[in-house]
Length: 523
Image (cartoon, rainbow, N blue to C red; front, side, top):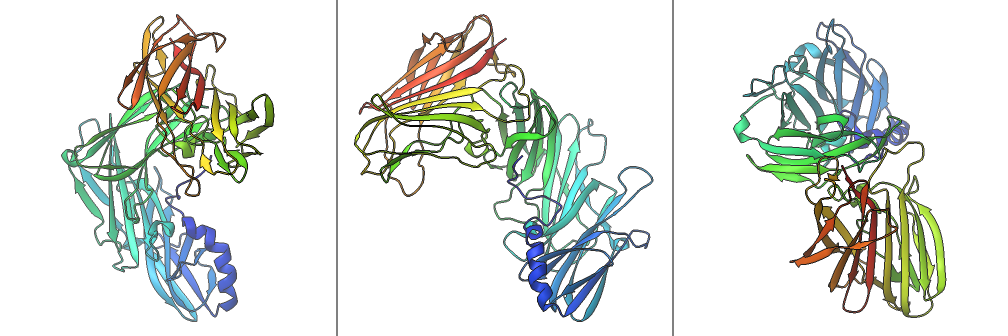
């Protein structure tokens, strides 16, 4: 699946720079650096060493004991010295050294100098094992120190760090205790402390509840996690605590140190590979604060893009057509869409598109006269190579927009996207047979960029229909307006699934019709 966050134990941006940096610096190389790494018994241990130039951030990776040609200057050498153990995971010792390279320079990182990394918590009785600790050392050569890092993880008692007081280094570490709930504490330090340790109380933690529903995802296995996301990047940025990794539905509770956290989920498809997932809104949590993060609630629907009129064209990006509203438009599933623009009885353009491995495909049709246009979109989830779960919800979405456009005037079309949020569903997104479901309905629209006129448009009327036979017949729902939202009362069938359709109109006669098939199930 796509990657939006940097890896925790690899020089993220630095790794991307390595080959280019090596090529450029090698031409000017007049000196060399050899880094030897010793284990906790004084024996040489083979590692991969990350070398970062100060202050440029040019980065190299080299095997320990191997000579690395460099231009003379100051560098940071850092690594995780991992050693096999007779049982368990062995030991990890994280170390770094700032060195001035001139001529043939050698440096040794000695795990025997490592100090145990300790984090303590007044854990409840159901936590019986030591915490798992992820730790990394970072080169503070930019405003993203975690992009130049080396580290690893192990259980407390088997993870060490070699002290170093240099302000060119940061040390970030995260501990996770696991019982009925999880407990996560994170800390950053300038340099590598002589005694890397911290003590926390449960009474000072915030709480994140994960509520993972099933039925809406392209796969059944859902891996949830929390990443540290400090407001100012440091060496804890993106250190990740696993929450759960199993088939939904499930719930989980994580107690965390106050701060800013990024929830995330990763979905595995029928072939075991990652097929989707995303990063909901980052949350800043205070001590004792409670927050619930949902994944997979019904209904998934179009999330951002609206038609645009500019330069004698109507353009539309059919991306984010089917996505989890609790996660966000950036992480919507891939779809295949048929897009049609008509004016009266004349078809201006018809095109089938997909974002599968293409990025944001775009529909563009030239227009030559002002008048009323109709743009329709028929989108199906699309992911070749996997079998969708039986009965997958929100499998198809359609849009039908009717708006006035003038080819000489640039604007975002005055139309809407609808969000449906059924209440009272169970963890499998099912309503009880022959019951009544209240569906919260909101009509929204968002700016499509700074270059197009974006006007405020007010929804004059909202209508809602439901279908129990896949859209063959539709039944009007009772709709009540409440503030900026509407509530529709839907009478459910005895079995099957419910499709939902909305119609939003404004005072000028612009009309937006949205339909989500298999919006929620009956069970």
